[in-house]
Length: 362
Image (cartoon, rainbow, N blue to C red; front, side, top):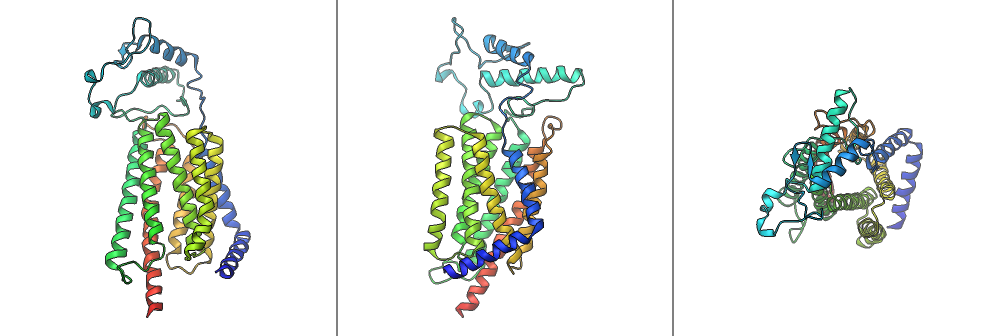
């Protein structure tokens, strides 16, 4: 096993060094990721003295102008109080409501942006985010919708992959598929569904819990995708070798997730980890597509370079159109057709490998 593996690795290394276009793409991809995962806590908007004064005053009296918020309930000493549980609205009505600080920040932002508009000034970011319009309590409705569509696309791809394996392709004894990577892709589907679910939740409501769940889910998906790229790219089929390759990567990813959840959410470190794993995964798939004779390798190239152009939306960030569509939400939109193509490649790969294995079995 080690001989063919290292020969393949040597071939990949030589090909990578000689492929100038590949290097250029990796640089573009790296810049895109650096920009997309960088989170700035202090922005021009929340540094504005008028905005700060508005938020402070609202948190003292519970009102912004003529708008007062029922979530800002104060006792005689000025402390926030909560109503008894039996006097609160049911959960299906509470989900679209915000706490006192959230409402104060939002409506102070709305009023400040109106003032800036009267002076022909463009929108600015508040707490690292553009000023969005809320719809049914959702903070970034377009990103929520596109995240949900990505989730649906992954679910469709996974179900179609499952049907292909178990109902259309020949099976081995015991009704097991011939395709050696079937289980790995099932795990990938589950992690993708989990990641896009928490992406939708996070864009709906950005609080500490949803932020950590979104970041953790994304790291788990990127880390596992790297493992899958290595195993499929180098055609690793031996279980012992799979464990040897996967174990250190799993340990690293789990340690990182525990670090950002239970120690500190270091945005810079998290950015470095995601960039490192993402670029390594990208290199693996690109080199595999360039040296492979797979009939559907063009779909890998399409997804990779389509993702690269989509990253330009993250690099050339712009304010939301009509308070709804910004560059980040459009980036989420571009991943929807790319997800469809990616699952199409996975199905093609299952058919290609199964056909070869059935021929060998005969």
